[in-house]
Amino acid sequence: MVAVLVLVSLALLTVYFRESSGGGLHSLQSTGASVLKPFEVAANRVAQPFRDLAGWFGDLSTTKDDNKKLQKDNAKLTGQLSNYDSVLQENRELKKAVHYLGGPGLPRDYVPLTTEILSQPPQQFDQRVVVGVGRNNGVRPNDPVVSPSGYLVGVTTTVGAGTANVRLINDETSAVSVMDAKTGAWGILRHNDPGSAIIVDNIPKSDVVNEGDPLVTAGWKSGPLTSVFPRGIPVGTANAVTQTDIDPYKKIEVKLLTDLGSLHTMIVLVKKPSAR
Amino acid sequence: MIDGAKAAALVFVTAILEVSVFSDVHILGGVPDLLLVTVVAVALLRGSVVGACAGFFGGLIIDTATLETLGLSSLLLTLIGYWVGRYGETTGRDRTHAPFLSVAVVTFLYALGGLALRFVLGESAPARHILLETLFQDIALNLLLTWPVYAVARRLLPPPPPARAREGAPALG
Image (cartoon, rainbow over all chains, first blue to last red; front, side, top):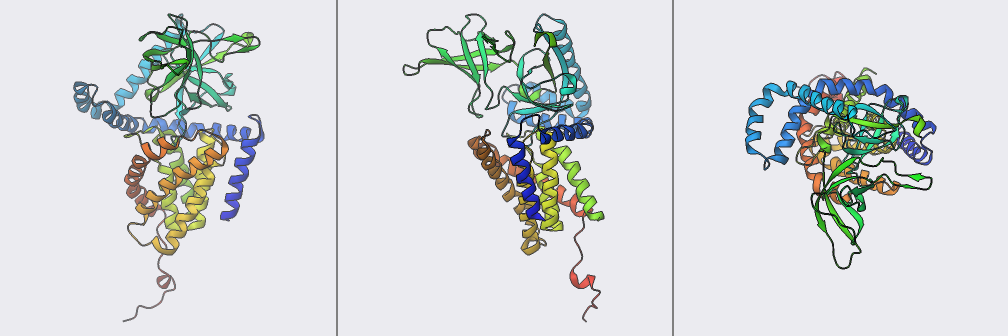
């Protein structure tokens, strides 16, 4: 019995790994994810107050140096207002989204789809989340994903019928072409080491990047190839610029504009059919 | 049969809670793994075969819900369920420390196995981050979950009575 289960697992792994994203197992997984989606949404709703409370304790450990006064206030209020906090947070994100969707920051040729985060992989190998829109909503692999304020968050990878996997920009495998909005210097945004800051490298030494300069997606086009990200989505600011004598490129430490760990809502930018 | 349904329901609920709630709970860099602890509890209470089935079923739900590589979590949790089940059947079932010891060891093995499989598949496997920066926190959080999860599992799946009591053997005076 156990041997059968192990063999089935190995068979699933092998077939899944070898087949294309439109293969039978992927379709089956997508259907399964759609079936599980209502359970996940229900669990999210029920657990929201507890998550807020747990999140508060987590934040307490990481941000205790930031603001003692805020912590003290939070300690008084969180117990009573955990429910209210979650509603307020959702409202704040939706307000930002409404402002972004009606404003000039929305890239042309894209339709915004606002969605909530459904789940995250339990192990910390990847920086990915699952969102509640999928193929049925027009989402395709490699669609850009932004925060409610319009800051770059990641890109869709595996897309199911009603859900999609989003690879965040702090994932080890993520690479985004970005440019300094002031000087036009180009580079690649990466997060090679989970324990260190996100960086932009491959910027020639001759190019100028100043600390505090805003960084946006480069949105390059080379013949028939185009970047998956449209030009001009804000990503972060240059926090520190370093270069050495032996390295032909300079390296920029980036301060992201959005806290990827605290997002509950995201906007998937789906390319209009006419622009594909 | 009823036991199997109870175990399946328990694993289903914990897998859903794991992907939608617990995976988002980061405490000091660690993430509690409710499903792993549940599989350990079920395996200790019901043995290696049920433990392996619980691991397979739970892993399948995790991989499906998160759209991750299908079969990866199933394989690891199946092996863990079987191994903990064997430990329970042979030496650990009646020992108070068995759930805690099992959870601590399998959390380490689960992380190690996950890294190895991902490395083989060519996916990202940040070993330093997983083994040095978050593993101890993961183990501590899972140990904190062990007592309540084991208590719930024990209530749902009470251990079978000793063989002599089942056979109705008269007590020797």
